[in-house]
Each structure stands twice: as structure tokens, then as C-alpha cells.
Image (cartoon, rainbow, N blue to C red):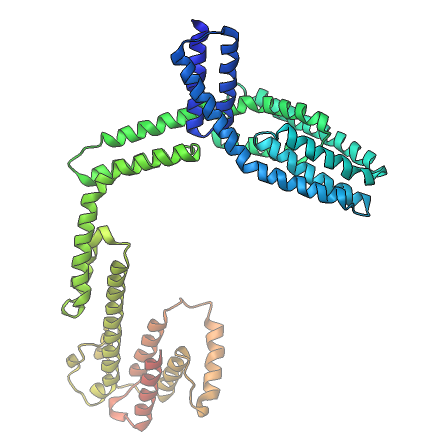
Amino acid sequence: MERTDQIIELISKANQSFDSGVIRDGQKLTREALKLVKIQGKIPNKLKHKLNATVALSRYFDDISSFATNPKRDKLVNKIKKIADNPIKNPRKQADEIHKVQAQWQALDQTSKTASQKQWNIFRSYVDKAWIPCGEFFDELNKQKLVNATKKQQVTQDLTDFVQKNNNKFPTIRILRNKLRKFEDLWNSHAPVRDDAFRKLKSDFIDAKKPILDEIKKQNEQIKLKKEQIIESVSKINSEDMDENISKYMNLKKDWNILDKLPHKLEKILWKEFISSGDRFFEEQNKNKQLQLDELGLVLKDLKKYRIEDLQEMLPKFDLINKTKEYKSLQNQVVKLRNDEKDKRNKESIDDLEKLFEYITEKKDLSDLTNLDNSYKEIFDYKFDSHSKDEMLESCIRIEMICNVESLKKDEKIRSQMQLKILTEKFNKAKLTKKEEISLHIKNFFLNLSVSKVTNTEKNLWKRIIKAVKTS
């Protein structure tokens, strides 16, 4: 009875391996079950049917493997036949070509069901024929095969050492997969080897891999269980607050992403189930998104009727669609309107600044200059009884220098002297913004203006100042 239970368990595990896509493990478990049946003899009919179904499935995968690889083997047979029938004059090149074909054949045996005896006999006969012209080079290549065999043994030993070192606590499945892939690539790279040694080397390597494959299988089962528990946790989320539901779901999604991936087929099934279980949370949110999109569409359609303040207040209202092109379009419109408004204020401020000279010299009401920048308001309190044309000229030239505007040719000498002066004072003065520097020199201009002594000279200097300011 105990052996019957073992057979049932082996059949169950084999079917699980087939379902998970781990075909070789399933076939191995099937063979172990067949051995136990042979030892026990008679088994119940129900169990016999289960075993036959599992054996049929194992053979099906063998057929699939053969279907995929046999045409490749046939191509290799044709390839080695051409080499045997038309030898290359250079024996080393001939041997290299044989070596490549043998390595490809062995790679197929390593990764799929081994060739049939008939295929193998045909292939070997052509290989033997192809080696004949190599003569002396055969011994050299045979030595290389022995070296390759030794290297394959070393890779197997290194793999065994890795297993023993980590046997108490294996690393994560991702590390194990990468490590195993590197061992397999390295083992396969040492080819070819003598045919009589290959099967033993292959068998030893497979045995050395088994503990890692078992650990990968074990960790796969643990990951599968955790992912199933996450799916179950999603099904239990049931708050009246949909935002809270979505937040919990997204946190579970983070937990899912932390876990390593399962074999592709199983991972795809579980992931689809996880996504489907969370769809209900987004149905209401998607409706609200559509409502916001519809409302935003109406706003964009008739932007002119809104003030910039109204549009700015609207932005937070469209929180669910803040990554859409429509939302970005509204943001761009707000930025454009802000810039337009800023440009308008600047223009109005410069227009009033341009009038300042006229208002002061003709003693008009300065309160009419409502758009004048506040930094110039202190000018209103000046007495305008000082008069220094030199200071006013320097202020003008300094503003032209700040605004990168050329001065008059007659002022080039003064400009050069001022540039030198600026360089010497550069490290001793606090750094001002461009706007602050212009304001400072405009104030200095008016500080040295006498209303009673205004001539065309002062008027022309002011025109130069305004022209420079308008270009900045």
C-alpha cells in the first residue's frame, strides 16, 4: 500500500510539473513511477489509467521535442555528408567544420530528446568518413576533446561545490536561474568531446544540477502560493471609499512586483487573474475620468470666456486626468496667458516710464502713471534742482551697456573708461539683477536733472535710455 501511495504522489507531481512547463522534471517523475510499478507488479485499474495518461503526456512532449529537433538533426546529417563527400584541402579547416557540426549535434542532445539510434548511426558514419582526410590533425583534435572533457568535469565540480556551499540556504530563484544559466553556457562552450565520454559527462552534469532545479521548483511553489494569497487579498478589499480600495490594490501590486516571476505560462495565468480581480476598482474611477475629460473639453473649446484666475483654480479639479494631453493643453494655456499678462504689464510699465521725463519736466500729475514700476516711485520725491550732464550721460551709457546696445561714436571713449571702472569695482560691489541695475541708473539720471535747465541734450539722452530699455 505504501508503494501505491508513492506511485500516486509521483504521478501527481509529474502532472503538476507538466502544467507548470517544467517538462524534464515531469518526465523524470513519470519514469520513477514506472520503475515502482515494475517492482510492485499489479496495481489498481484506476491508478493504471492515471499512469497511462501521464505516460502518454510524457510521450507527447517527447514527440513535440522530436518534431522540433529532428529536422535540425537532418540538416546536420546533410551538412556532415557534404563535408565527408567534399573534403577541404586544409585538414585544420576540415576538422574545424566537423567540430562545429558535432558541437551543434551535442547541443541538441543536451537541450531536447536525444536522437534515435538510426539518426545517430547515420550521423556517426559520416563523421567517421569526414575525419579520414584529417590524418595527423585527428590526434591533435582528440587531445583537445580530452581537454574539453576535463573542463566539462571541472564545470560540473564547480557546480557541485556551489550546491554544497549554499545547501543550507540557497539564494533567491532569480540568482539561481542566472547562476545555473552561466554554468550551462560554460559547460556547453567546452565542445566537442569524445562521443564515448559525452553521455557520462552529461549524466554527471544533470545530477549536479538537480539540487538547484529542485530548489527552483520549491521556490516557484512558494512564489505561486504568495501570489495566490495576494489575489485572495484583492478579492477581500471592499471599502465604500473607492480611492482607499485603489490604494490598497496598488500596494498589493507593489507586493506582487517584488516577487520573482514564475514560469511564463503560469505567470501569465496568475497575472491575468490578479489584474481582472482589480478591474472593479477602476470602473467608477474611469467614469469620473471621463466626466472630467468631458468638462475639460468644454473649457478648452471656449477658453476666452475664462479669466486666468478661473483657469488656475480649475487645474486641481481635474486631478484624475492630470497626465492627459488635454490637461497639459490647459496647463500650457495658463502659462501662455500668464506670459501674455506679464508682457502686457511690462509694456504698460515701460510706456509709463517713457512718459516719466515729460511728466516731470512739464510738471504734470505723476499719479496718472498708474502702471509705473514701484521701484521708480521714489523719483517723485526728488527736487530736480541739481544739474550734471556728465552724470546723466554716464547713466545713459551704463544702461546701454547693460542692455547690450551700442552707444554713439562720440561716447566710445567714455564707454571704454566706464568698462574699465566696472572691472575694477566688480569684486567690491553686491551683485544686482539687470532690472535693479537699470532702475539704479535711471534714478541717478533724474537725480542729476534740473527741470529749469532742460534742453534737447537731456531729452535725447532720455530717448536713448528708453530705446535701450525696450530692447532688454
